[in-house]
Amino acid sequence: MANAKDLKVTLVRSLNGRLKAHIACVRGLGVRRIHSPVVVKDTPENRGMINKVSYMLKVEEA
Image (cartoon, rainbow, N blue to C red; front, side, top):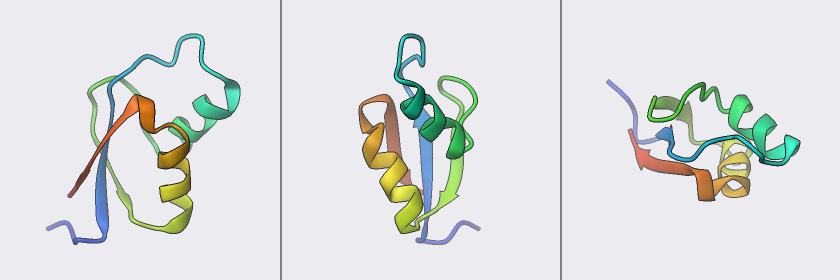
């Protein structure tokens, strides 16, 4: 059902002690909890947020 233009984003590290801008990026992607995947569109805006907090995320094609 998901297109090749969708990405499955999963938070794998805690947000505790992170910069507010990084927390905002994770929230902007729609991720709420650790190990809960979210499917987002593969847009330049989402890619930028993913790149900024890539050390906390696992990203797969959906």
